Length: 378
Ligand SMILES: C[S@@+](CC[C@H](N)C(=O)[O-])C[C@H]1O[C@@H](n2cnc3c(N)ncnc32)[C@H](O)[C@@H]1O
Image 1 (spheres, rainbow, N blue to C red):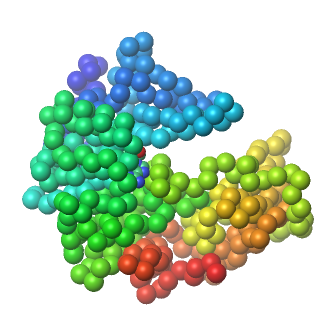
Image 2 (spheres, rainbow, N blue to C red):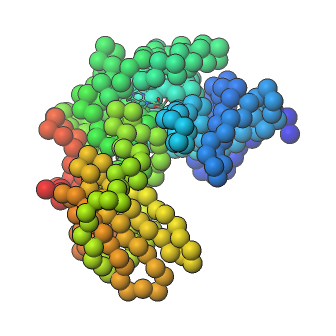
Image 3 (cartoon, protein in one colour):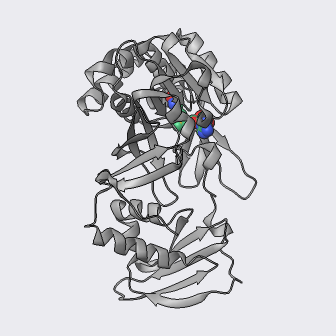
């Protein structure tokens, strides 16, 4: 297969898979992903991320460019004992296509993108709406400069700003459409303020326990934006609110703990995407990690770094109860049990039944209708 036919092949693959709508097919055909992928990308294997260089492995590099796969384009090194962490990427093409479709743009509309990354999505928006109608913001100056260069050499000239996308870009507002390409937990109100009434905001939304879902909010003329979960979507976090990464940094073996047993099988919560999503809403500021043992045994760790609270549950197959330890001002496993009980009492709803309303006072999750608010942790 020639390299050019691989590019067409990606468009065909996305179309066959039902990810690429007719409204975006021309843009995906014209914008070449290759022009936005750096010569060095980072590939994940069992022991972390490793570089793959175009110069030394050109065929492999080309194959990856036209594969329906996310490509990590930048990693951060937090020190000799920690693994490399991705900090920028070219999103999976099917995710790009799905989000642009959810945006439902029309000719003549303006769009704001948060998280320019490689510039590929900004090029697609520019191809569809015109350069003058597209503004994109990237927080990382080096990434923003590279995106500008990529866009220029591909012949696109949207406005690319360097800064925190959570502030939006009021100088160019209002926007008909806002698309966020990093995971948010708290939707910054400037994005609502800068979207025209009747406009739409498409954003990945997640919690420390579940990252995440795709939300499509519609703005009213009363300063609010509200809308449902429309799918799943896992993105790297908004750099302004990245949850504390290392669960085990909070867990200290010398901490005093209360040890009891729990009857709740951790797999019922963390092995069920809908239960895990709900737990993430009701048990905020909490992350988890799993340590696997022999014969199907594992330990689930929960941690809230800010309060130093942590909990662990030791799962043993065929047991009716599991050892549980908790430390700190929050009883995190108790919160998970309460969240799971609430989810069951609500009829074990699918995550697509939830939605979010954002106004000047903050944001609230709802179930089925904006009038039925999900209880907040007190
Ligand atoms: C998944 S990548 C975006 C992919 C991009 N849309 C593309 O087409 O290649 C996420 C990007 O969001 C950026 N980012 C994270 N937090 C941000 C923020 N608060 N404001 C602007 N950009 C942010 C990251 O630096 C990263 O480049």
